[in-house]
Image 1 (tube, rainbow, N blue to C red):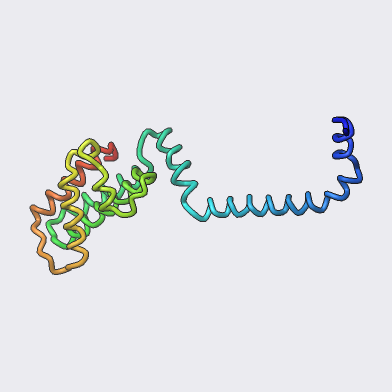
Image 2 (cartoon, helix red, strand yellow):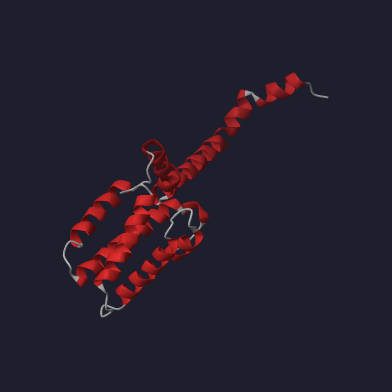
Length: 174
């Protein structure tokens, strides 16, 4: 029966190491290839950004990632709505809805909700006190985009934009 010392000496012998050297090189190349593929995958997809960098930024700033951009867009929306023009209000509603959609993509990332409607359905009144109004506003935004001849009342448009503003305020963005 071989002793422990004999087993160790045969494994560490230079003859066996020389024989296994090409195999070790081959396995090292395969491992580096897999590591390279993993790094490429993480860079090409937004997975690394979404799961780590966004969360890290949110942790240190205590705000949702993208809050600054949303604030800038909201200022543009406010500037647009200074004029009582139906087309400009349409544009403002579309901009506000898209920005809320971008924010919800980041908030509801881990729950596999594929589109804006699913994300809105997943949220409750604990997230937004006016969730039902936001759902109606999103439906109206879809109608506005599909039908350019849809008549939009200015009072209705102002009310919808107030709902978006309330949602952004509840997220502590504006």
